[in-house]
Image 1 (cartoon, one colour):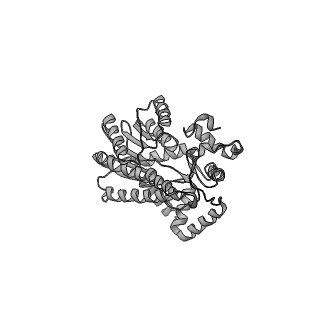
Image 2 (cartoon, rainbow, N blue to C red):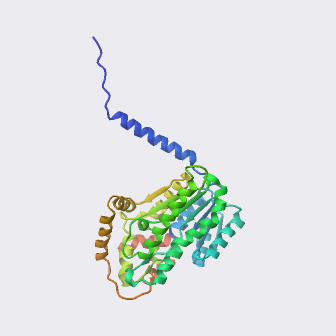
Image 3 (cartoon, one colour):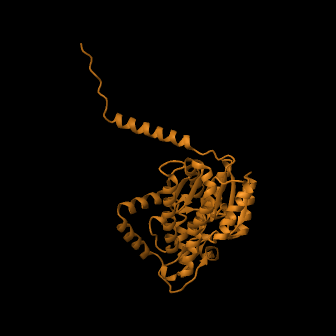
Length: 351
C-alpha cells in the first residue's frame, strides 16, 4: 500500500525565511558591534538627563568619557558621580553654540585622551510657549543650542573620527519634534528639523555607499522621563505651560524611561545603526506623518486648541522657578523622581 505524502503547511516556508533573516541580521549586527573598551566618547549636554545616563552606560562598557554643558555646577556633580562609578572622565563647561568654544572643547578632549572614537550630540534647550509669546532671540538660542552646537562639534571632531574609519561613530539625538511639528515648541521643532537634515546628510556623505566612513546614527526619541521640566523654559501662561508639559513628560505609557532609552542608544551606536526610534509615541507619530503628513499637521492643530492661549507677553522662565506648592501633583511624581536621579534639578527643588 502506497504511503501518503505528508503535506507541508505553506505557512512554514515564509516563517522559516523570516526566522533565517532575523538570525542573519542578529549575526551581522554582532560582527560589526563596536568594542567600547578604551574608546573615547564625547557626550555634549552630558551634565544631566539623558546625556548623563549615556555617559554612565558608555562608561560601564569600558569607554573613557568626555562631557560638557553650560552649567559648571551641574557638570561638576556629574563628573563626580561618573568617577564614583569608576569611569575615566574629562569634563569642561562651555557653550557649544559658540564656534570657538566648541572647537576648543573638542581640541581639549584630544589633548586629554589622544583620540576621539564616538561623538554624541545631545546638547540642547526646550522652550515651551505659544509662538506669539516667544522672542526672536529665544528662537535664535534654540538654533544655537540644538543645531549649531551639533554642527560645530561634529565638524571639529570629524577628522579624528575619520581616522577610526568604520569604527568611528556620530550619534545625533534628534527628537520626534524633528519629524512632527508639535505645538508650543516652535524653536525646538525648527532646530530639530534642521538637525534631522544635518544628521541624514552627513550619514549619506560619510557612508560612501557602505565603504569606510564613520557610522552616523540618528536617534528619534518620543517624550522621555528625564526630569527635564526643571531645565525647560516656559513662556506665555507659564504655570499652565509648565503643567501640561510636565504631565506629558511624566505619563508612563506615553513616555519612555530615560535609563532604558540610554541603553538602546548605546546599543544602536555600537552596532552602527542608521536610525533608532525610542518609545511608542515616536513610532506612531513617525508612521502617521509618513503616511498622511497634512492629516498629522491638522491633528497637531487640534492638540494646539487644547493648550493654553497666548498671553501677549514675551520672555521665558525656567521650570525650576515655577515649582509652586500647588503644582506638587502626584501626576508629576515620575518627573520629580527622574529629576533627582538624573541631576536635572537640585535635590531640594525636586520633591
